[in-house]
Image (tube, rainbow, N blue to C red):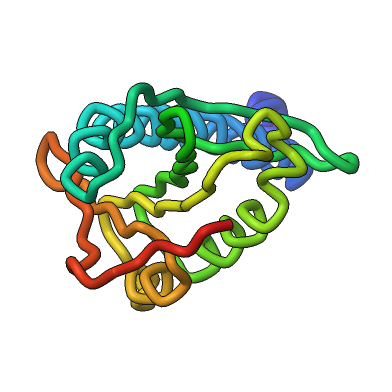
Length: 169
């Protein structure tokens, strides 16, 4: 083998390092994309949430995004909180809703008043908003007393039927 060929030959270790660096950069880009996509979906839900809840008899006077607290060494985040003087509706927003997402949010709702102490004397309801649902996660959310909110186009719509009674946490 000529000297120039030996110089340009990549070892397995060099190729592996290049692969790892490329993989890291792809993950960074994926995180940026999904983060921005999630913020867009949150904005679509927030823009119509108060009106959708008013149609269900819950008059909302404000919506707030990305509330975050720490409790017992764990971080708790809520994508959107809709509220009035007595009712608080935390809403988890997902582009693709899965049953595990609902289960995780139900765990958050169980400790919500302990974590978000400013709401300890309020009526707490919950909602799951999404673009697409898999595994019948929307039905699972409904059966667990959550508002089921679908994003379509530039609006959000509550899918629960009129006989639905939300669970109070």
